[in-house]
Image 1 (spheres, helix red, strand yellow):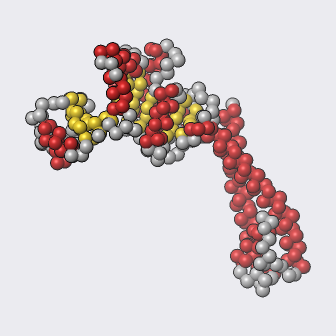
Image 2: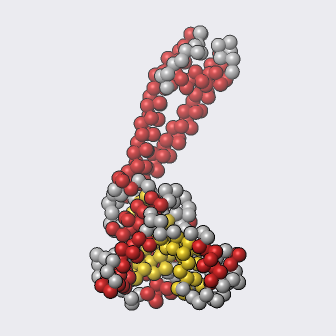
Image 3: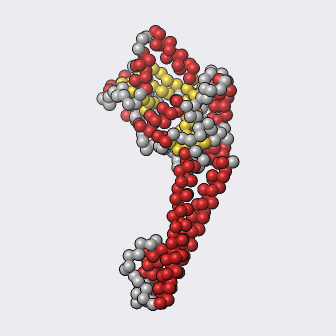
Length: 332
């Protein structure tokens, strides 16, 4: 109810504001035409009369044009009295509309109209860090957050456009302009039962892909049970939260300090970080050994090849590279 009331007020005020602007322009044009007609010597052009009307209404009063006739001065008096009321009404509505827009955006009640944005679904510690680090790495990247639990977006996240709503409903994605988004990251809800949380994630994925089939989707799942369904629904990448964390823990017990190494390789603020890039044309048909030599010249330590979604780490040196292959490297 609050959302509908706020949106109604916003659109009503915006429409009213446009009407006031149109009426004001017509009014000053009419005054300018009248002043040019009755005092052509003082107001040689219609625009001179329009200029005089505007500076009079706004109470600026430069004094560069002054009516000389009694009738002209009577129009001036009327213009001052009526103009102050019109101008005050215009400024008041402009300020009101600005405040409503600000409140609307903070509460996630507006609409996002840009494209090629990164869409993040779910407000939690993981999505918070994702938004912060993405903005730090690429400040020009447009970021949109969808969540139905957050009442107001924190003030220090002004670089994020917040859309409040159920991520499983089309109306929410219409306001988030999911159809024009580039990538979506769907985070898992860890505050409900795991199977139910993963089922909700799949539903959200289906909604996103139904609206934008070309959308690149990265999905976080808690259990293994829904991995197949996530792939069927169109997930391009699946983060198996429990499995990945357990693997980190296990490797930490086997090789003390290895988790710090992995964290550093994933941190793009560090010089040595993992990356994937398309194979250059010059390496098509060449061996993996030749690729190692070439990438070393670019300060990239080659780890393996990604082909048709499958990763091969440290293939044989005579491994032949194909078009559309991707190289897996560590940037030095």
